[in-house]
Length: 179
Image (cartoon, rainbow, N blue to C red; front, top):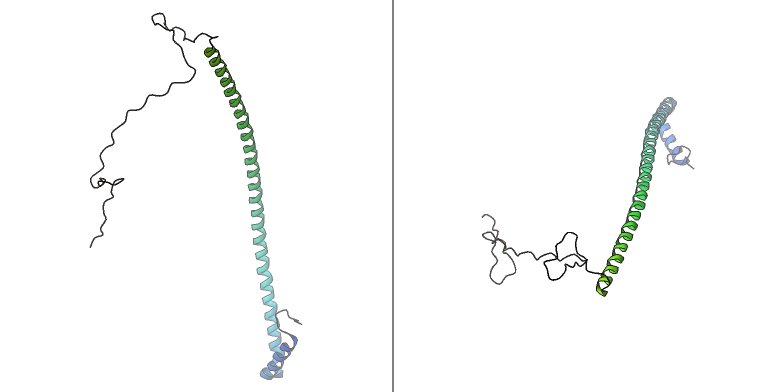
């Protein structure tokens, strides 16, 4: 059993009191006990004051933390709603683009089939004079391939970086630390 709550049992307290009685004597023992009681009371007051200050500071910190959490939650919610709006907009644009592309592909395929089967005359652009040519101008609905780019000669490597004969690439200059 621990009557003071400091980890000292009843027999240990009794031993300390007996030793104090023999060391201090019966005249000074009551005075020293009052001083010890006053010191313990003062220390408890200090401890309660410090505990109150800590609780006040931690209370303010808890309030600030709660405010930050609420702000974060509202920002997170607004971001989620913005992302949902963006997602729905992108999905509608995606659907519109897909329908436009599929319509174009279907009309392209139909026009190509009609031209290949001979039921549709070749298309010629308005204002193009085809009277002088032997055959009317025909246009395929596919774009032309771009012309091949001319190859450019690469510049010679800088001095010291020339590739040795039989190697795959340029050689790095050798580094020798100063002596």
